[in-house]
Image 1: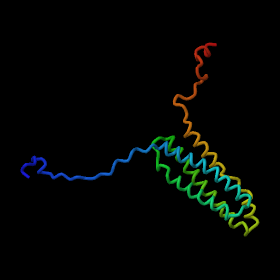
Image 2 (image 1 turned 120 degrees about the vertical axis):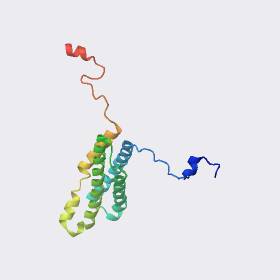
Image 3 (image 1 turned 30 degrees about the horizontal axis):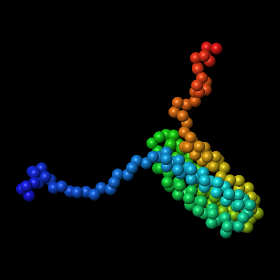
Length: 170
């Protein structure tokens, strides 16, 4: 080993196989993708809830409702744990709550349908199931905000392209 330079003889080299560095995650893109899928699933969930409200057969409803519940929970798990941007963090929280709410509403509605035969009161509750409610509206608004972000400059006070000087002077 005399042929090795002194700095290499003092400290032997160790080769380490490192995994490739993960590319940075675009949090807003993840939020947008989850919201887009959730909006599509929301329409299917509304259809399932309408069938529950109509006292449909659980054997026909559950094969469609069960996978929706699982997918809403899975989408919730796909959300980033935290977002660096405060607006993205707010939207992440809205999506988290809406996805959780949607999963619970569909699951509980099917549970109520399963037990409605036990009580006229449960039958009445099933008849009054309306839909996904405020969580559905919040999800739609979050998706709209993710797909059409507000302009950086904000709206112009007098409209685009107008000469503000002439308007103030008159």
